[in-house]
Length: 339
Image (cartoon, rainbow, N blue to C red; front, side, top):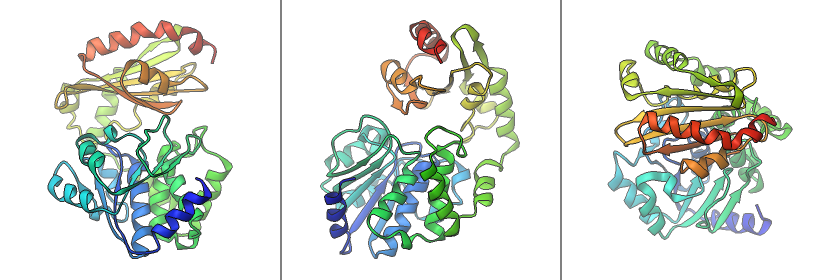
């Protein structure tokens, strides 16, 4: 971020402001961790702050400090609309285009509050007055730490802020195993632990608390796993009926796509999840090396993300979506087999 932008933001935050913080729809660990981490920091500075999420998120994130303060747009749209319209500053975290907020898109687009973006996804829209965008970063939570540090307030990081930011860094790096994990990432994580983030408890809260139905659903997903060895691809399907059979709850399919990617010789993995309520097939794509699932998703499934992790959607049936996916794979034969 430019020094003059930091100076301007520091001046802006030198007096009390009405601030709204917004993550993307279907918020994950990085979205919730970054918004609540920034929330705790700004509250300490005396600002009036509200975190507004487009919709609900997994229960394994609801222990994070400050969770009880979050407002959900799909349940409290009137209150949220009023807060957005009245805000002096709107921070948008872990996304870079308003359509990623679902039903909040129009009110955010029309709002007069000054926009500050903090995000690590590719191809940002030009809506923010101040934009901190860096695709090389492991997570938005790592960027929030850098943002606080650039403001000269790293000493303000306490156990609540540290815990929130640790969650997002841990989840978005796949527990520190993805290529975006750098020595700087580890240095920041060390500082967060020093500030009070209990790494063992955080990992247990996020990853090691499962319901019986969630494990049964995982078993169903793995039984549906298919491999196309000549194209180094694996994919999983989950129908609405299968989700209902195992009492699916938001977050139950988090990380399942990575099982396909863990297979020896596989470069590309996908999971296709039927959502009849939205009338779409939700798609998650993962890859190894330089194969860009971001480009694949943007070209064929109306989505995007990172080089090795992206999402998308299809309005076709589950069967037709899988057929489409298989039909486009030969286009990427050379790229897949060069990894």
